[in-house]
Length: 336
Image (cartoon, rainbow, N blue to C red):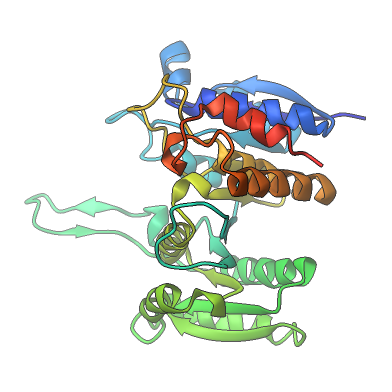
């Protein structure tokens, strides 16, 4: 029986890396059918809407989507399509693995293998209550943290650690200064952690976390934190392993999940056929795990690793002279 997923081909380099990803998934033979829908600039040009109702309906129906990067036109619609998708479908868990791969341009660390679990719907990043005074001299926003939101993201992080055989969860906060919001998050995290005695739990202030990630990233296993801190930390972690071209992301809720490359649409190289598809391919591997296909997810990750190690047909950002499609072909040829 085949599973149908919604596919958003995206803007800029999005269609190129999506075509490459679907090519590899076809070679992997994972039993998927695709419902292609539009969002972002491409949707706006066709329909006048950044998120057409047909796209939202497809995600709700299939409950799983694979998404390329999107462009939000300046001055049009909401501030971020991604934030709007997370809000619409209550995709409260943002899961960003950072794993070292061979033959990549990572300057600061090797043998990194960690996951950032970021609360995805609350906090300062959600942008609630933004106001600028009439004289333009003062700007404010509301940072709201709830017990419910904190509990479910921390529980997700500990459940993920149990499910994947990881040993430690680090709770990242700023409760020494943000005593109400970060304080509530930390309090709830301690309560949840007590229910998982088999998983080591430690606490770390966010600024120290950033320093420690650069100095000794091997001490981290699963990081769990709030929305804005998680946005910053997960990009720092991507920098440890070679950049956003190797950074996938999953946005997961109770009723839907969207898997993506976390980098942008890169309009400067769109149409040149040189975009690196690894981030979206790794997002597809996360999707396969979500669809209870861990063996195929492992096969895909192993093929990516083997291709990078061999330096076979790599795209220019990885030091090669290959194209998006030849790199995808090289990965497909290594699917064990």
